[in-house]
Length: 227
Image 1 (cartoon, rainbow, N blue to C red):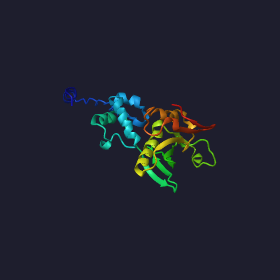
Image 2 (image 1 turned 45 degrees about the vertical axis):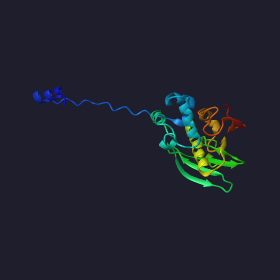
Image 3 (image 1 turned 135 degrees about the horizontal axis):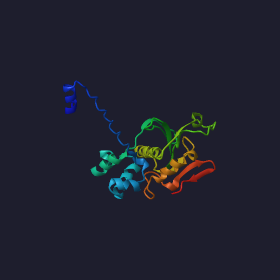
Image 4 (image 1 turned 180 degrees about the vertical axis):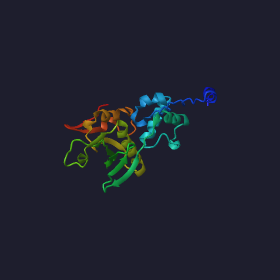
């Protein structure tokens, strides 16, 4: 109790109203690491060299925030200070006789998406989802019966690549080379984030597959995403 409040209560018998304290500011949300271009991350991590090391870890599907990543303490401290780590829950995995591996992921917001790794002739192609559901309503497609729930962000698209890279490494599958946007959703309805995902990777040192091997299922055919 302050002196003024004590005096008012003791001398005059008046109880002053309690001051209304402003609520503490909400903690700032950290930007997802996978949604930041390495060139931009370098300034926050302490240099382009550190950013390159981080993306080398991401390429292998490993967690650069983890102590076992091989990254230095200062780099990991900078990661924790400025970015949020890749996060998802693996709900189910199925493998066909030809080796195709389907992954069902639950994203941080609770949505579920599928991504599929297809091995063929010494390399693997990854089929990623661009939306949760789809508004096109194609009768032959199970996703079309869901309707469109929302579009995925660039970091959620890259999260599928990061998860697939871990699966490829863990199960000894051929390395990822191609990425096709032929999973859940219509990529042409999510152009901003579909085209933004490849640009969140280094031009010559991508964490997963190369940009020139990234295609999307557009209304008039398949088109490579331009670097």
